[in-house]
Length: 298
Image 1 (tube, one colour):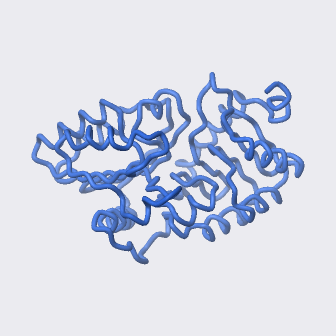
Image 2: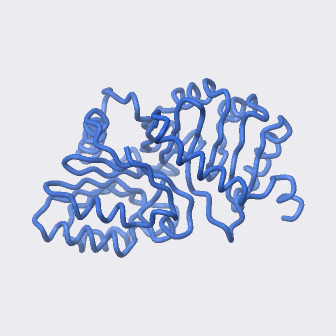
Image 3: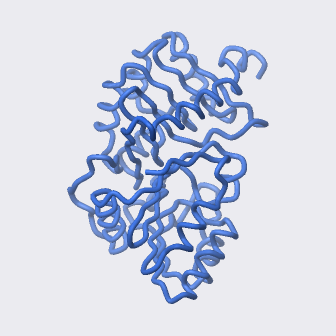
């Protein structure tokens, strides 16, 4: 796998992936509105290549209708996510794409901010079992069917990923986490709190009042929490690093994200591939502010 971080890599790796597609392109993304991505999709369609796109029908920012119309003007086949991911407070929040040979799985939406302002991560690879599993998920969602059980050894897929996430966290002795929110899952919060000083966590400065309380609770249990200033970058990543593996994906630490949404995450286990995550985490840790000082000055 090739590991990328944003905003360092920019959008060129994704544009190259789309341009290099020879037979078929499949994209599932919560938000797509970046003009360069749109142009690349349109150019791929003009090469007589099949392009299928699944998007959420009611993203939080209300841009669903406008983005949907813009996507359809590219000539791609566009479907709104299955109904079970379109209910109240339930979303198709996945962020992945694949062509005939390779796949990309990440934390970023296909928006301008993802490539310029946010901390994001994504991986590009060609492992056959992962590709096959992603293709099965995409085809099932495209047809509005259940994806069923199949090989997901290196994937963490929602809905119903809560127990697997719990196990991953419990089995992690020392963790470094970058996340957009702490969330509302009481079991997950308790697992995190038991890590004490062995857990370092970076959050964005836009966290909710509920997450401020959650952070206070974690800090009271000796968890090390820092806040990334808005003028540095926006912490949108969902990354968990331990000694054995790294998780990145679309999942937030919420019960809805883990149990109801369509979400896709991936586990990276090779040492040389994991190195970049710790390098970026260390960079972000130095750029962020200790939670107690941030709250005092808030």
